[in-house]
Image: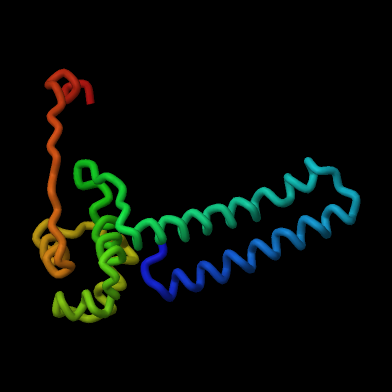
Length: 148
């Protein structure tokens, strides 16, 4: 997950480099006389990395636009906290100041996607970001709960 502008710029540069490298590699393989299916077999792992990086860049761009994924049963709460910071345009340094903690603490927490964060701490982060979360509770019929 891309967490800040520096990582975003780095990912964009890597994406451009990888795209050029992929095209060059494909051309070299083609020049050796390999068949299309053989070239595909060689290129696929590299293309897979390229696609994953592209998806991360697009995900960061969606967050910057304020587009979030739905949170279900608090799974993904850490990811949401990071996403909210990004969407607000707040740096890790600024969030650390607001929380009165060291920047390295926020960096470490985000690297671990706030794994094991308490609800009290999550509320402090949400408050520091100046956002308001709302819930939409959906009750399951008792039969579904017993089966699950």
